[in-house]
Length: 343
Image 1 (cartoon, rainbow, N blue to C red):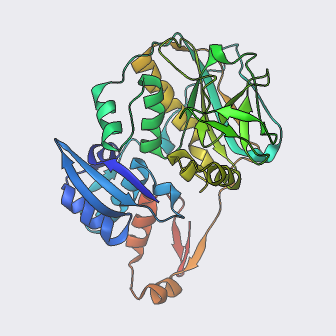
Image 2 (image 1 turned 135 degrees about the vertical axis):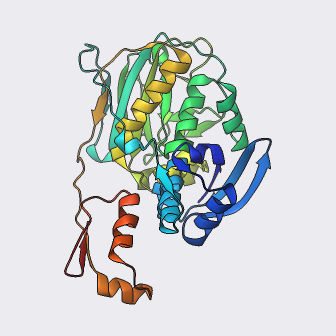
Image 3 (image 1 turned 90 degrees about the horizontal axis):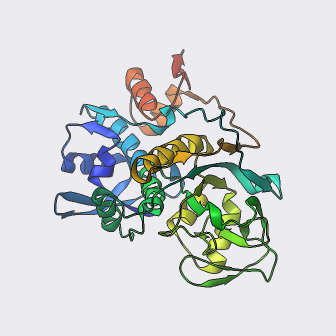
């Protein structure tokens, strides 16, 4: 999987005195590979190859986390900053309004978070955001849509905004499509749906989203939009892959969803997007946060014999280095007792 980032977006999460060339060299030696890079005015654009099973590194934050661990391992001071796992989520529970979402089956999503924001002002994005999107080959659209695209690049979790007033009954149902149903998507094409496609309908039978692949035109955000619904979902990977391949729409969102990003990031990404919307488009949060997480998260304990690790790697890795590397990558409760590493 290939992604394009700017060095500036990477340094949003990486505090280091390392130069551009040092960061690139260290990443290429033992992390995501920087295949190409080029300078555009004051920006360095990085074309990065992500190993297909490492979807956690398919974002500016993910690459920065890898870079931080690698730089510190090579005695180059570095610090991971603005970590979304440490983001505090605002308590909106005193708001009386609730969003109405229903799910045809439990196993359609890993997690689904949503909120509504009213009285927003749709306008062009700040120049920095437009520059970022343009540099990574995305077209700026408006401040609201651009925020969701920027967040995908920064955090590796796709999101979507609907014009709330265009959702007929605002009783949203996430379900499998019925063979023969159609949706007009945002790329001005009409898709003939199959029964393995995942869609959202608005309560009146109108389909407003081809989930994980592309939004529909019915509830598109435009210059007249005043009130929105923001969703940050994690869909069932296999279902999104089938839809993406069948309709031949290999969007960045589809490529991320089909590899199973971390549901634990949903609420922090939702909060980050809320903060950006309020700062760039005004308005106020008008509903409680909707958070559907049917199976939750159970942490796993991993153990490994250090003698086996050193034999396998052909290196004698000091215990302090092992602990530092794992801590920098976000592992917790790292302990070594009698040559057994657990975390």
